[in-house]
Length: 289
Image (cartoon, rainbow, N blue to C red; front, side, top):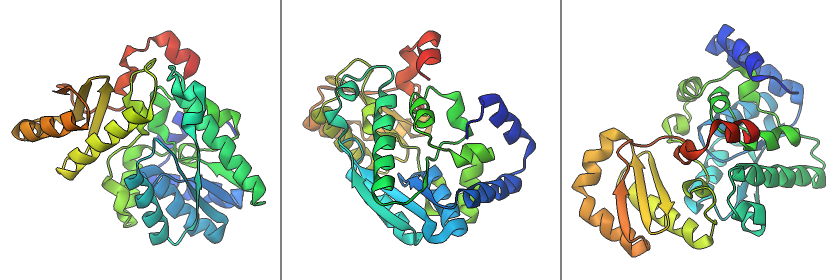
């Protein structure tokens, strides 16, 4: 089932949050069996919780371990699935074996998601689940550069939250009302998104990013990105956290240099989703997003 951006936007504008939630329930029930690509983030957790409510054991959560998905996030996803009493399966994908992904072109996300959805399709077939594969994309994702959406469309993956017209803040609102611990969880994207396009993705870079972000999270920062510019670590945090970074500048600098960066910088714009896309022109976004 495919909808244009205009159709989705029109649907979202005319429905209340409660009406969207009711529509989501109908969408899930009509599927019968849903395989949720479950990352443990705000969106996929809400989607899984609603799918469990509507479908019970016919809602299947699948979390894929990979080189670019931090262990802390993988373990958190397992914990959340257990809390939701969801039917839960783990699997593993090898992104670093795909040369198109490693080369890190501007449509890298396409190759990442295409490999994931192909794997989930094979998993569903092998287990005879006859399930509709679903992701957690919401309405806000329509306004960003998302080559992975092309992969989803080509693989027949559905986005129930988009179909129901949900925006991120509405998902957070209902998640809070449902008592989901993820209602205020920071946004997260795979660690490869911290590496500039055209710069090869390596396990060393991924490890450096993972350790650097883990260190900053341990210090108590809520929303964090460490962008990897070879010898330079560019830290993104919310502007209200700038003073705390400066207050801890010596220890942060020492820790990130020990991890392998020569220079440590603070981005004065602050955290922003998809900041690596700033270098892309409109033509690139139109052709790949």
